[in-house]
Length: 400
Image (cartoon, rainbow, N blue to C red; front, side, top):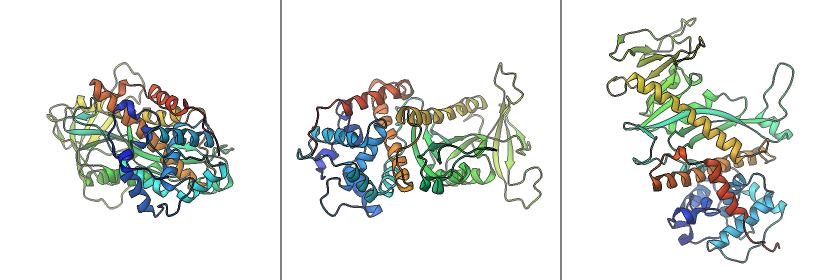
């Protein structure tokens, strides 16, 4: 169904964007058209569910994970009518929804995500910056998908010594802007693809104004080089077996070192080393012998970035775990897995989920700026519940 530029091109206030407009206003008409053109999925003939409308439907699916697909479509139609779309609407059946989603595929959603979901913090956003650096974190997670033969063949499942998981899983790695919890740059693959392999693709979207924080699972010479090639700075926790010889002790107790491809037990050829700064510390009151943190950073000046500040900043890495909880617990809800039955629609649904999370986070950030507060202090659960109430609290629509 066509929409006018006036409807999608406006810049509404917070109140106007609650409900279905949380979807529509976060992704403009131009964004949708570019995503469809890039994937070759434009609508060339009139259908009950056009390609444009199907994109909104997939995002609405993520906002209403506990609602059947026909009811999601009814809510979407009513919401679009409330903001000016044509009134002559027919709610198609389950097979019509499936056909529309299959025609669309996953590529338009991927292009829309990659083209629109970016860090949104402004200089006024509290908790998003350290000096001139935008704080971002790198990490990965998994999602269960339905136990269908095609999904098991495509995505695989975790295994233990004597058992298999009841569900196949997809793996994804993403960056998050820690101050706003926007998940950007995400890449997904089958369960057997490692987080490090996905991270090599994800870090390409880093920018020179960013400080990338990551746990020791991502530490390695190759990854450090890839991050620095983008112009971004890094703050990674090092592995226990990392060789970090002292080359110069600095005024705050940190020291400069050289990192290369050599590790204990590896006597192969060494590549040119990278100079880094090492910060070592313990957490007060913790008796665990593993309570020793070794951080490696490319911020070499202790006056510009004191060791105590870097130890504190590293804790911001946990913001990405909170974002994963928002994605997997509050958006997905009580569902054990995504609901699409085929690999292509699983990919489509994954990007719909990421886009829905972004739409909610956009609203939260806008609200935080209005009251000059930290976005972390605004409840994601409350925000998503408000949007869901606006989506479902609609008068009945006659079904054709």
